[in-house]
Image (cartoon, rainbow, N blue to C red; front, side, top):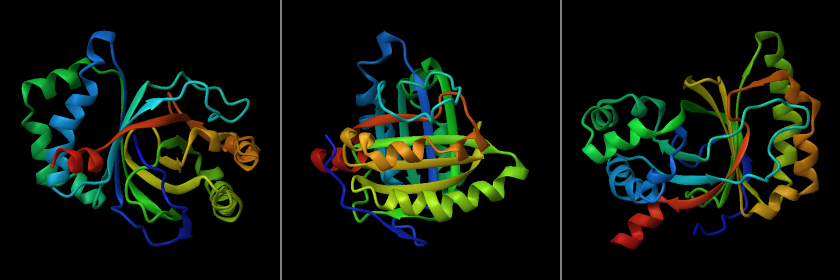
Amino acid sequence: MAKPSTPGRITGIPQTGTGILAVFCDLAPEWRPDFRPWLAEDMFPPRMAIGFGPAATFDLIEDAIAAPPGIKHEPPQDYVTLYVGPSLGDLYGPAYQGLRTKRAPRDAAYHKNMQNQARSVGTWVGPGIEADDKNFAPVVVIDRFKLEPADTQAFNIWYACEYLPACAEINGLTRLRRYLAMEGAADHILVHEFSSEADLTDDTWRALRASENWSLCHFAPGAPAAYRNVLNANQHKNSAS
């Protein structure tokens, strides 16, 4: 289980890599028992070996407050795995693309049997809230959405001047990163990290999620959603060594 992260702070300097890969999916019951072992044994080690990290996999928290009131959205995927790359370029470089083109049988089988899969690749855009702990926190809330050109300025002003400072006042919110997507059904990705599920009941968080500014966003299928950290790649690496 992931350890609580240290409090975050607003900064324009990223504390980890600036590329993000998020893979959302559902799995049939027969594929679930081997899902985490597959990630821990086949997926995390080669990606960490080429400089990725942090990385972690998460399970959906079904009853968490994530979607703004009145926002129509499709049911979230049950699982998401997040990888931070050194940069967006590394996510398209030969080292990583080589891992994707030469898949072992177990690897190929899992990708083939993922259901409702959504893959997002993006690059960090500051400012954000950063934490000293490089691992992912125990809980994440992920927004994926598009903005119409006419609404982009209004959203950016609200995000920078109201949303980000208010998030920084939430004790349990340890990191908030914004990404612009190169791939996926959304142009914008927000990854909020929390120390515990209880932090999602914070009054400030509830008020922020109820803001009318979310009506400017066209959410991708399955977004927004809250997830529970079940395996950090760095922690698995340390326990295996």
